[in-house]
Length: 72
Image 1 (cartoon, rainbow, N blue to C red):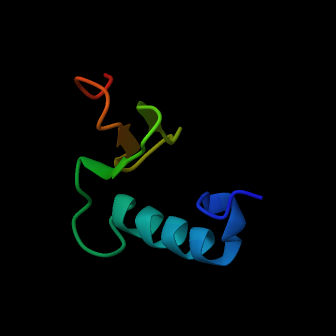
Image 2 (cartoon, rainbow, N blue to C red):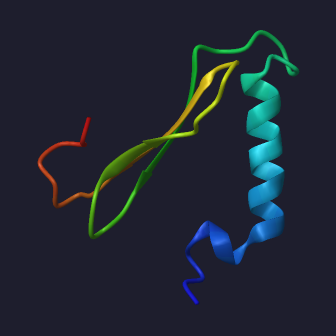
């Protein structure tokens, strides 16, 4: 099991996902255009986006210090 992965922490993952959805849907004030999680990883870089039909875009950008630039 990878204890650094969100899958290992389902309760906290669901809590964060619910909070982010509330922000993105404007339930905690005016919704921003984009909600972005920025994090790092030693091995790779990527950008992913939650597929939504309404509300703010929700994205995660992971950037490796060994990469010359973040993807995207």
